[in-house]
Length: 204
Image 1: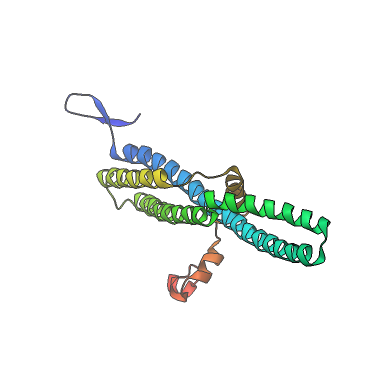
Image 2 (image 1 turned 120 degrees about the horizontal axis):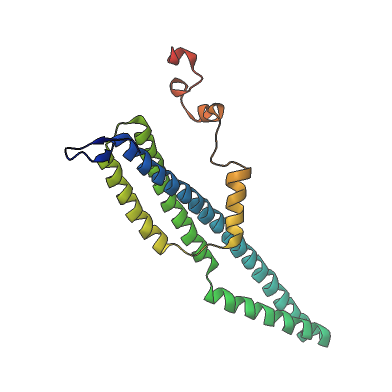
């Protein structure tokens, strides 16, 4: 390990080495937050879709039950009555499940968690940028790191548990679809002409 001797002749770690070690930790934290954010985001989408499907099924079963009752009463059809009773029982089971598991509320909690994690993700990215630019001291780096870890701990504590399907979707989004990866040309499309990397006039 490179270092300089102190007044007692002992070696201590130089500032650049300290920054590299702390930066490595922050990079790892950033990576975990990226995965957590995307997983919570996918979880919100999956549960929201399930919620929508449950609502559609409830509407369809309610309509079939009402129609079946009318046919059974006025048509005196025993078979229809049995089918209607079965559909009614299924609908009752679904309604009971929905009362105990508010999918809409759960999806919203995942969405809120994703928003909070997005903010932390961007702050980690800004911190890594400041470190690379060497415009921040080791003391400031450690202070900001500790603040982010404290905020992140609070977010994780209040976040709903994710599902394995969401993790698989997050993996596909980040590794296959590269949802967080942009080429210079793609980034330029989001920026004013003056700020585009491909603007040769501005870069001269």
